[in-house]
Amino acid sequence: MAIHQMLRGAAFDPEALKVMTKAYEEVLQELQLRDRSDELTEIIAQKIIECAQTGEPDLRRLRDVVLKSLAS
Image 1 (cartoon, rainbow, N blue to C red):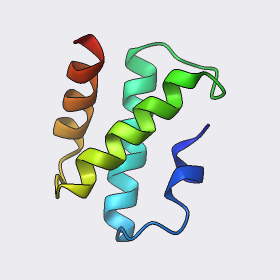
Image 2 (tube, one colour):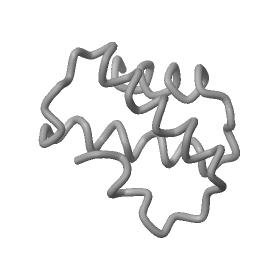
Image 3 (cartoon, rainbow, N blue to C red):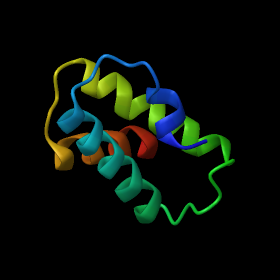
């Protein structure tokens, strides 16, 4: 599932959506995930959204928080 589907109707400004989408793509690339139907891609998208909801606006921190949480 692409993050775009999960963000439909979400209350984020266009810049936040851009940052979240880029962080999602970078995490998928880092983990070499190409199959968007992989359950892990949905988990990644949800973690990015949760982190962004706390007010985190930084692409690198979003990406790093998600990668770290997956490694735990």
